[in-house]
Length: 362
Ligand code: PEP
Ligand code: MN
Image 1: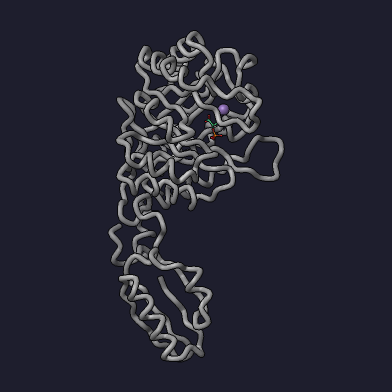
Image 2: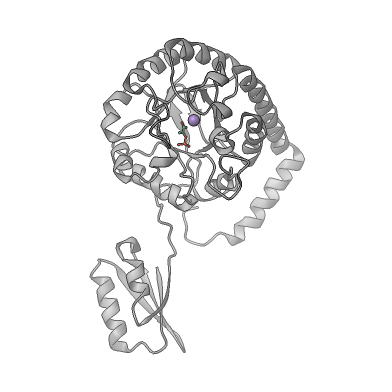
């Protein structure tokens, strides 16, 4: 952290501030300028209350130089993280398709959708047991009884399963769930995140519709700080003034996360658009943007879906999207390994070398 002092700060005031900083077990160096002096705080500056420092009479402004997401950020880990979920890998070049209904409705429905999405190219099966609905009068999910149905359908088709937890009291029920989802509404449920940080199980953390990428990364930090570093992020659209889609898919978040973090990021075009007809276009765009996977809501009879019917696609439609996703990935990979692609990457890396700050591990 760098604290730029006001030009009229007296030596006594500066010394008081230096003392206060040192009381937090931090080192501080003073750089004296002609008009203004600067204090450089060395150590974990998160221990200081930035707003308090900013409001001091002696302080002109404060600049943070480190990111608040030390474990999720690339500063100390350059390589992309690969997350294993049973036999499936996500991240670091491994791409996964997650498919299944918004909510588990019956044994028949789960077994039928599971085998169809598996045949169409899905590697993980999703299904909500506890549905966080905006209205208390909407279908709330089958709850506890849904989990064994999801487990059975997943195991019968050799697919790891994903389901959303809405409260830490449900943790015991999720023992057999391979990937625990934290939904958009719970992205900042810090007590839940801390609890998930104690598990030895991957977590799918969805971005809240009113949260920044920085907040998404600091939420992932809550899980990682507890010791569970197996976090997959998910962009699922943010709320904007655009009414034609349920949310606005922020694909730039994929590029930003890739830049700032080593964690995998997948895209959920279903909740982002809210309409079955837009899911294919957004899936292909997400792949081109560099997403590590897709999560798509699939129903064997969308019109009868108890939850999010407008965005549900059929297993056939999912199969068509999966084929096109494969094709886009093949084109991108062929380009990147071609002489032209190689030259572009090589040029970009050469251009980046001199800009890299000295002393950073990567
Ligand atoms: C879901 O994936 O079932 C869901 C409710 O999504 P979100 O939390 O993104 O709204
Ligand atoms: Mn849904």
